[in-house]
Length: 355
Picture 1 (cartoon, rainbow, N blue to C red):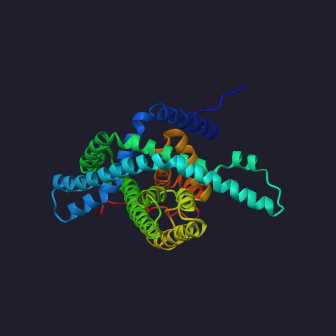
Picture 2: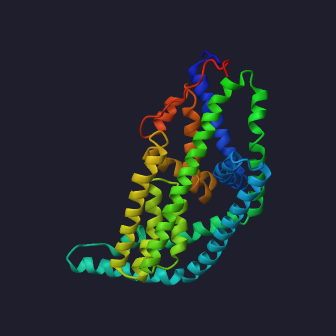
Picture 3: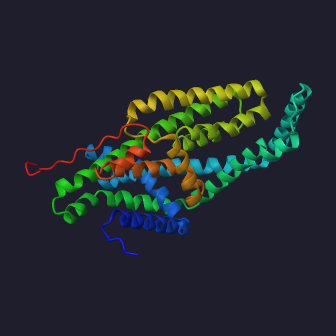
């Protein structure tokens, strides 16, 4: 059997696949280190926009980083305190919520059976138990709280990333033979990632705030907690809004009744339609998007590799890979496969000597 040459397309595909498997296995094995690092990289990417905004207004780099980091510390401290307190109270009341939801489920099954519709109640509750959704929420929040316990390491990493970002372009210029030409793709990639993260974070924060206000008006318990979950899961388009609404609707059924639960569901639908279908596409553009299938697969993949934090960062990580692929004409076809529509190929200047 003759061997394939190294430059053969099949050989390159095999090498790329093998390298991908090795990298994924390494990331999963180093999950304890990778999760805080990726979370720090995500926070640093979001924080880079206000840092650059302050620098553009002649604010010293050290002072800009200090101001932004002080704001991040306050936000993360508040989120961590909220998660710890709300999760403790939620887990304390969880057995009551689960028991009450189980009783309502059995009552609904009995009502359907009285209408003459044969339903195997035991099989239905074993296959689909609504009370398990609340248990999954508690488990996920505990996992997220465990990650935030490494807050000092995460914040220290963010500071070093932001401090290094200012000198990174100069280092790249010394690496390349033709910096103006070779850095164009990198600059395009960095600008698109920062733009995506900035817009997505702003829209997600507005979504979480609107959800919290609506639930507080209706009197649903832990309204701020459900708004925080809506904020985090809004990074996962289409699927995330559905997942975020399930525990709040179930809790509203137990606490307030079916009518108010329907109002909760309507509120989630309206907020996500306005923010996801009107506001976000207007600022995000058609080029920065993923197909629904890719969103679901990335959610499963990164959740398997990195746990609950991987699920929250699944779309930003996949979106970053797509933007990187779109900046290279040889890999733009992969970006087309990942996206729902057309992906614009950045124009790479061929002659920059006039600069």
